Amino acid sequence: MAFLLTLDGERILDVDLIPGFLHRGFEKMMEYRRWDMDLVMSARICVEDPDHVELSYTHAMDQIFGVDPPERAKYARTIVAEFSRLASHLLWMMHFAGPVAARYATSWAIAAREEVLKWFDYVAGHRIYHHYIYPGGVRWNLPKDLKERTLQVLDRVEGLVRDMERGFFLHPVFQRRARDVGRLKASDAVRLGATGPVLRGSGVAHDIRKALKYDAYGMVDFEIPKGEYGDAYDRAMVRLREMYVSIGIIRQAVQQIPEEGPYRWRLPMALPPGEGVGRVESARGEFMTHIVSTTEKPGGRPLEPYRIKFRGPTMAHLTTVLKHIVHNEEITVADFPVVVGSLDPCPPDIDR
Amino acid sequence: MEMVLKLLGLGFRYLLRRPYTRLYPYKEPPFTTERTRARHLLYMDRCIGCRACQLACPADAIKMYKIEGEWPKNRLKIFPGVDYSRCTYCGLCVEACPTSALVMTDYTMEHLITEDKSTTLYTPEMLAEPPKGEHRVTFTKDLLKPPPQPPPKKGGGG
Image 1: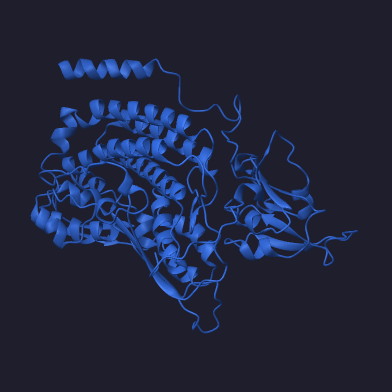
Image 2 (image 1 turned 180 degrees about the vertical axis):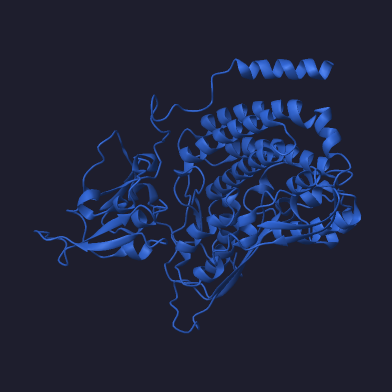
């Protein structure tokens, strides 16, 4: 992913996205692999937030198989998805703090993310790609000491996030750097297809977790943070507040999760014909997976889906939204990293 | 001024903390847990040569190799070998194995780093040899056994 900027001195007049450097042809590759292999591959679509891609794929597959996951699995999915959001926002924090010269905040974000990655290793067996959320539930049972260990990790992460808030987000230099930069009105955000923190930063309190109440989100209390002015600072603050919201959701979920019970339904290997759509609120916005399974595929086996289509949030943010901001505001070269950083792009998601 | 003092205090607190980085490999081993998925271990006496692991591998990292010898359970005498330059450690091979012949240990990829590309291929004999360093068997099929309950039918699909 690269940007082609048209400049007049320091001012950016136009911006064009050049995608494709990370193109791996996921959607085509998945048509020739079994549905369980596709799940493992799907995590690679967004390196920073892999669990939401898995979750959206899993929801679509659950619909095709016609299963409702067990309650324990619903909570497990919610906990893992929120940890993934935390990890993603902390990595965004690192990317965002660097270009505005706050190197200390970068180190704190990485230290907090390390705690989250260790938690993933403890639950799922891997740090980055977890392959834990699975059609029909979750892949294996949660550890017995989940509650104590998770609460310990959350306490440490929350402490570091509070330090980041005091040391970076409320810092007057950062406020001056990000305030009134990259403004996006609520009506424009809706019109241009923005989702997630970019949309909420503009003041629209829309969240798929609240709208669809998938998995255990209907059983936990949480608020949707939103901004007021729609500038880079508001978008950053929405992400900061979302980290606290995620911590709150996980705390409730580990208290409410059933102690016993099944965590996964056994699914047949052959894929039944049908269609499924999975929509989830990923760290960057709405992530959607549409899967079509048919027995009429020429030369195909019933183990492979006929077609998989992903819709990630980043493409809209870096094309229509970014162009709109650059055309309607005096953005200089120095502001550009702040604007792009506040949109939290995920290049693998665009290129796929 | 107040803000500056607050930030200095915060900064000093971090200055006095223990460094977060692990002194790997000189003083500390790599971080692993009881579920870390890393190098495989092959029990050749259990393997029946069904190729389920090879068919399950999304990265095409597994190839079957013929090993001569007495293998009463494995008439074809074929066993899996893993190319670690391709393996993503997803564990689908362990899940697919009907006889639990393939398991994973927490002998992580840090130990498997090599400068010579030709050494990334682990033949069945190499996989059957337990890793030389400290390790534990972490990922077996037992972990994946789902309760034997049929999926409940839901009206109109999920």
